Length: 277
Image (cartoon, rainbow, N blue to C red; front, side, top):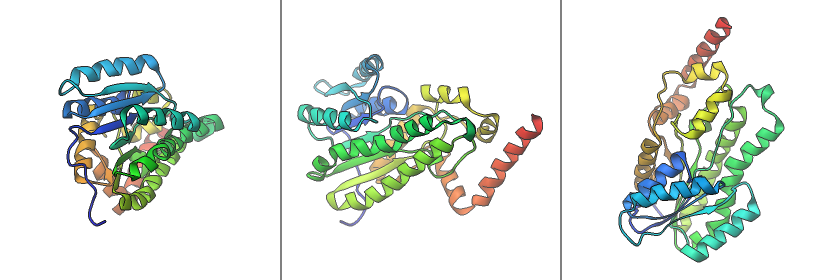
């Protein structure tokens, strides 16, 4: 099959979104509801899911759209398999799967315990693997589209994010390999790589972020989740593999073609903080 696989339109499409109760996942769900898609969001917390669903209901394009929520822990392989099978029986095979579940607790490497590292890998890479594997056989029968959420830190490792960057680099590798395999089945694959975004999770990140990390990210700006969601839909319409909202596209090109420049900027920020201590 030649050429890119694109999403021609979202009206009437069935979309499953993990991590859909807040942040980028919820912003994407609301935007898709306005586009006329049927949307099912998945997350762990019942209350946040129900609040998110109420917001989606206000954004629906028309009566008759199916908007729903289901509790799900993406790190639990058996639970993911069961819940996704139930969702397929109830709503059908999704045309689009968007994996948005994630969180970050930046810190110095020596302060990141094995338990945090283990959970980080499970949420990001195991989570994406679990949902894709639960739905892939069904999606192969009719084609579709898969988006896995990585980060700017999926292609450039930054001070303070050893566990997070490791997991997000893995998401890009997984997505690139999957894209090569899935294309023959009419399934497109993209990886979303947002920069800093003003989400509830970002506020939590700042609680443990080392001063060196803050110095590196200063001046980089802060996107709103709605901006990331709009960029995501544009990227899916184009069939882009790496979707980089805001400054992410520029950062990707800098890291790829001028890695020394990225390293120089980071080292200067780190040295400045070290001198101030």
